[in-house]
Amino acid sequence: MKNPFEALDKTLEHSVRLQIMSVLVANESYDFSALRDLLGVTDGNLATHIRALEREKYIVVTKSFVDRKPHTRYKAAERGRQAFRKHLDAMAALVRMQKTNS
Amino acid sequence: MSDQPAFERDLASIRNLMDRSVKFLSLSGLSGVLAGTYALGGAYYASTLLPEPGTYTAEGILQDRGLILHWLVVAVIVLVASLLTGFIMSARNAKKSGMTLWNETSRRLFVNLSVPLVAGGIFILAMVARGHYGIIAESCLLFYGLALVNASANLYDEVRWLGYSEIALGLLASVIPGHGLLFWSVGFGVLHIGYGAAMYFKYEK
Image 1 (cartoon, one colour):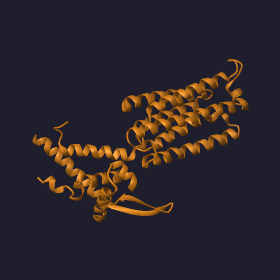
Image 2 (cartoon, one colour):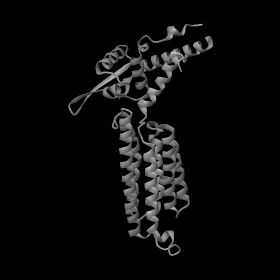
Image 3 (cartoon, one colour):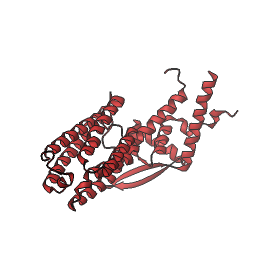
Image 4 (cartoon, chains in turn red, cyan):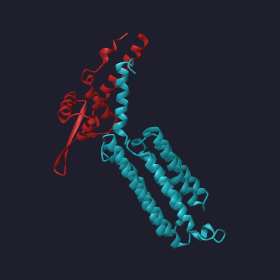
């Protein structure tokens, strides 16, 4: 049997990143401040994890100006959706394993 | 539960987060009960404006422009009072759970509700202006039901069933003409009170 621990996504193992991905998979797009309020994290913390997801090309960033203020929105990229699905499948497999072992 | 595996807890919290990111959950059930009560009060007042029983027919009433306009004013007062109550009580709910009333989810909810409601409202006013008073009640119920179904993705799942009920009632009213006020009272009064109370006890108690 394959080891489900190996199927876990290294980038998504961090809980804030996994949370960001779940919000973006469930919604067409989300903006920075709404994401920050929903997750209850600081600006700096969120920015760090967004950058990590961006680097993996899991999310797409669109920048625009609303009332001359910069407005940043995030979308899940197809690559990110696939990684998210695989990661959740691996988590579910681990849950099943833990259940049969106990 | 402490013996719940960590991954299982994580999966549950992700599902919860996904829900919260899509749905506006601050909508107050109690404000539904109040809105239903206003509707019943308004419908009762509207019925007292009718002439003595037996002295009129449904067709005759629908020709009475003065009475219809009076009813329309009552309906608008009920609508504004309900919206205001819903707004104030949902703002209080949002504050209690540390959320803001105007956020990503409520913005989407607003758009999804507004499109069918504004279209329906303009349509009904246009029909009234052309003298078609007989379709007001069923049109209100139909467009309201469609708006609820359309916006149900951004609300508790039960809202979809409230929407289906309003649509069914609107269709029923359209094939049984002459009982507009009764159908209107059931759709906006009884259903709101029942739904609001159920939501209040399920999620807010």
